[in-house]
Amino acid sequence: MAASWLVLLALCLLLPLLLLGGWKRWRRRRAARHVVAVVLGDVGRSPRMQYHALSLAMHGFSVTLLGFCNSKPHDELLRNNRIQIVGLTELQSLAVGPRVFQYGVKVVFQAMYLLWKLMWREPGDYIFLQNPPGLPSIAVCWFVGCLCGSKLIIDWHNYGYSIMGLVHGPSHPLVLLAKWYERFFGRLSHLNLCVTNAMREDLAENWRIRAVTVYDKPASFFKETPLDLQHRLFMKLGGTHSPFRARSEPEDPATERSAFTERYAGSGLVTRLRERPALLVSSTSWTEDEDFSILLTALEKFEQLILDGHNLPSLVCVITGKGPLREYYSRLIQQKCFQRVQVCTPWLEAEDYPLLLAGSADLGVCLHTSSSGLDLPMKVVDMFGCCLPVCAVNFKCLHELVKHEENGLVFEDSEELAAQLQMLFSNFPDPAGKLNQFRENLRESEQLRWDESWVQTVLPLVMDT
Image (cartoon, rainbow, N blue to C red; front, side, top):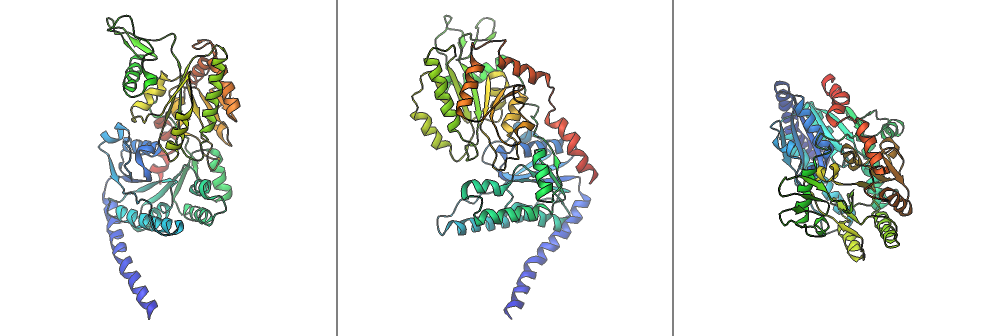
């Protein structure tokens, strides 16, 4: 008797969804081409999905982008009338019960909430889904696709279970369950994209999932910019961060000076200061797969070299990004007694970050190691788009992006990074030095931009299926 009631209850719940799904299939056949893009994370910190949305809109699709709205997306996305951003509400962690129970409640809430949001949106020809996070979004998007006739495309940035493994350990039951879930539901997608050839091969060999490699490429706004725009950014940052302020006042009080540049009052001409500090940028997500202590230790060694009389400039290190370990490392930075190295951690608007990289900075440092060893750091892609050389910590497939001694350097530990900083900044600013050589190599490489790469790899897939 109880089983009969359960079946009846399931039918009562399922029937409205089936009817709604049938109506949405009819709507989809009558509507213009439409794509639903899903990010169960912060849209503003998901550049690849923003780029997908912009490229789809550029080629005639209307796009509904669902995700958390914790930080501002790029202005191009906000200005595009073909793109609608739908904010999702994130359930904060519960304060009661064991951790497994809290996590289970959060997953169930997110699944029901995402299902409701998707079913009451205009149906799409495709559902573009970012993974990770894929729990519970892969199953929900597949189910909605079955009801509404939408084809599911998963863009594999990494593996969600491997990120969970950094916190719980690779053999934790939750991690093993997440791995099974990701593998099982990942096979149900219609198309799969991934970020490296190494991930494509792993998906094929171990997951029986065929994917197309779509490398991250810099968007059009990641490019070298005029010196006057760089100066404007330095003056803006100098209002809140002392490392950007002038070390001395100019003789002419009408001359505008930052720590790196000055604008002459009469002509308005902007020049770089000869005795400026070197500017190093590290964009970080402040998570367990980025060992920030490597950079701090290297900066300490670099400062000691300066104090020992080596011909090295003072250094300004700008660290951008948000993440769970930001406060912890900010306290460590404050405890350091740096004399010739200054560290600041501003949060930059989406429009200011490219300006910081685009000729303003002298060197980028990447600490990303990848929980799976199969993805590549988007931050390096952006830096290369601005022709900014990079020192990057080595991991399994980094060679697909960073070419050692060609567009940057690869290091293993803080000792090696400190030695690279010493070599690169010796006799700074030296036009004949390694830094400028790497920058020229990047300029001559004629890198494809995101739009050009997307047209070659993704557009044929969505037009032919």
